Structures are given as structure tokens and as C-alpha cells.
Length: 588
Image (cartoon, rainbow, N blue to C red; front, top):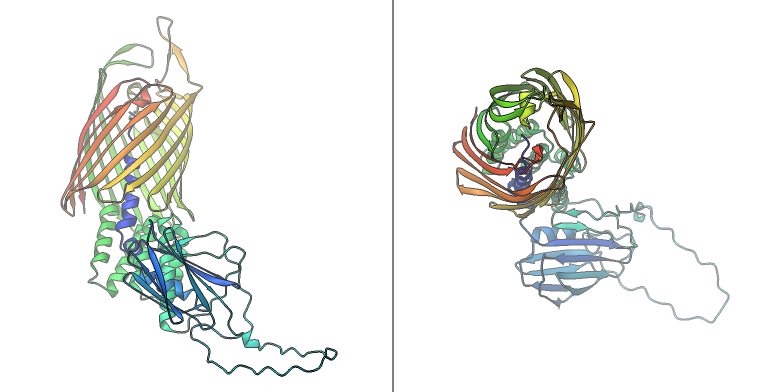
């Protein structure tokens, strides 16, 4: 039975956002709300210090330096990283509390302009050719100017060729796409070419450059560019193979890409270097808690108003098998329906049971992605499925091909041993730290006992979710579309000469808006509540709501309770269903 219930999608959006905010790497990247923009060219350089809201700022000269005072804290680490990108223009910069002291390179002029949400520092002037930044060039006496001579015809003037070491290679034109790098944005000024930055010459400068690359990779993760972040972190880890911070960041990316077992290996490697780091211990434990071996038992009581009653029991589990994961799921449905139409057109009651099950193996690919191969069975049918999840540079693609999957969303489908064949594709992307967008498209057909083709369908879907409050508690708002349009629906004629469909599926186009709140009531008690309204353009409309509660007295044991109330959208009526259930989860 398909219910108007977007709980699973909402919880996924909240889990992704919460994981990004509570992971050890994202927490480091989010310590400061100050952003820094740095750009340079032949005509000058520019630094902008920006905050989310209005700030008050003043500036005062201090010899050749300038002191800027603002009404909030200045992030010293972000300032150091930005200055490391402009060594030809800035000799030093130091942030203490709410003050910033900036010293330009000799020969450079500095000016400060207040902005609505920060300040802008511009540097102009020229320096002698061949002078490399990092330290001021030694001063030399001015060249005397010869006294003027009587006018005479101009003679050819020799031009001294520049020394080879003073000729810098041509600077590459910067990527026109402005990319936020954690607290720092490197933005080439309009019409300018980025100035070539000299290679680091000391440990402090090299460390600053690595911090900048790590910050860049962290933001790529937060904005959904996980593949780019992985490439950046792998290159960085090759340079500093003993960096626990880089290992932890790469483990977080691998988790985001579906490679949780590689992530566990990286956490083990990091713990070997720093076994007492609580953030690493906690991150590995959370990973094993989410993906490790487990057995789960669910039971639900579902009552459709003025219609059928179902008791659904499900047993599922997963275990590690070498480099793969094997799993199973067995489900039984005890149905009591006062009126149901059978395939021959007769109407009557039904009180009986139906069973279905799935066995599968999941293969994790070294290049990223996951493939799941399934064997499906049910009362009167046997089928198979292949599903593949593939992370891209930005976002994740999901593909699936399912054959003879038992279809129980409508009562007569359960009685008549209905099944479905379908192909589907989906795309999901995290945008920034709060947005999630997902879309899908499915197409296929329905069959019943003895008939493999009783209706065709196309099913598009869409969801946009935004985490308003990053928790816990977390508040998420979502809008979704769940549609299915039928064609070629087969009918038959009963003994009274009346036409009826062989399967009572209907077209639908459900638009829903949802608000969800999740958090912790105690250290070992989690909750999730949601509410919304569903508008089916082709059928009935109505509100829906639900809640679930999870109690985890031990790391290996979890108990939960689920309650929900919604329309039965797949039936095309205004009937509502109330669900009360619970589960027991054992991790081993």
C-alpha cells in the first residue's frame, strides 16, 4: 500500500545535513562565520572581510601599516591563509580579537573602504622587477639624474635585457567560476589575470597552503562535489601521509561516496597515529553503527478507514562477506479485507496471508559507487533486480532495473498476486550546507496472476528539502511531487456485463509540503516528528503527520516505535490509513 509519507526522504536529507555538521571535519570548517575574498592582478590586489550581517568597522594608520577594528571576532586562521595567497602585496597580517593589523610590502599603498557587511582593503603600487615576495627587498640609494644637455638628435638607446631568473612563466588565467573555499574565496578581479604565486619557501607558508587546500576540500564536500574533494584530499595525503586531519577528511568523503569500508580503513590508520583522539573513535563507531552487520525485526498494524486491516511483519539483516555485503529481507502480510474484487470480477471478503522475500549482495567499487544484485520471490512470483549507485563530481546517480517485484500497494494486488517490472533513474545533490534536491523517473508495467501486462506507467518524482535549523534539534522543510500516470490499463467484463479493471491502480499526482523536527530527548533517546499536507491533483487531498521514537540503551541494541496517519494515495480515494508499529535492531 503506497501512502503519502515523505518521512524516509526527509530523514535522509536531515541525516546528510547532520553528518556534515557534526563530523570532525565539518566542525572545524564551521568555526568561523567570517568569509575572506582575495584577488590580485597587475593593477593591484584586494582583500574583503565579510560577515553574514551588518558590521561596524573603523581603520587607523600605524606607520606603513593599517589597523582595522570591527565589532566582532576576526578569524586569524582565515586571515593567514588569505595572506599566503598574496605574498607579493602583503608582508604580514595579524588578527587579535576584533582587530586586524596589516603591513603591506614596501612600495605598496593600502586603503580601507567600509562595506555593508564588512570591509575592503585595496593595495596598489609597483615593486622593482625581479623582487620576489616573502620579504622586503633591500633598499638602495636613488639613481642620480644627469643634468639636462642641449637638444640634439635622439640616439638609439640600448635596452638592458632582463635576467633570465627575473622572467616569470606566464600566469594561467583563473577559472571564471567563483568557488567558495571554506572561510576563504579566491576571486580574480574582473578583467585581471591572477598573479603567479611563488612556491612556498618555508614550513609556515607550506602549512598555510595545505590548510587552504584542506579548507577547499571541506567545502567541496559540503556543496556536493565529493569526487573533486576526494581527488584533492588524496593528493594532499600523498604529500603529508602522516596527517591525521587529512585522513579523517578523506574518510568522511569516502562515506559520502558510499565507500564506508574504505572510510573505516582510513579511521583505523588515523587511530594508529593518534589512538586517543575521541573524534576519530566516535566517527568510526558511528560509521559501524550505521553500516555494520545487523538484524532487524519490524511489525506494523495498518488500518484503512472503513476498509481493510493489515498486520505486516518483516525480518531483515546484513553481514560482511569479504569485500561485499550480503543481506536478506522476508515480509509477511496478514490481510483482512471485508470487500475485494478478484480477477474473475466477483466481490467478496478476504482473510489470508501473503509472503515475499529478497536476498542480495552489495559490491563496493574501488572507483566509487555501489552495485546491489537481488533475487526476489513472493507468493506466486519469482524475480530479480540490479541497482547501482554512482557518485558524480556533483551529486549522486541511482539506476535500477527490477523484474517481477511483488506489488502490494493495493488490496486486490495482494490478493491477485500482482507484480511490477520497472526501470528507474534518480539523481540527488546536496547544495550548500542546507539544501537537498532529488529527482527520479520510472517506467514499467503491472501484471497479475496469469497476466504479465495489465497496465503501463510512467512515474516522475521530485523533492526539494531545506534544513532551516542545523541541530540537534534540526528543522527541515520539504516540497515533493510523487506522480504516476497510467496507460493501456486492461479491463474485463463480469457476469453482469459490467467492465472492471484487472488491477485497481490509478493515476496520481501528489504535491506535498512537509515540516520535520528531529533531535534527542536524552543521550540515548532520539525523536523525529513531521506534519504536512498532500494535494493530489487527480484524486483526494488531506493532511498527514507522524512520529517515531528510538531508544538505544546499548550500542548494539535499539528499539523504536512508529506512528503515522495519511491518505492512501495509490487507491485514488479519500480513505486514510493509520499505522502503529515498532522495531527491534541488533548490531553485532
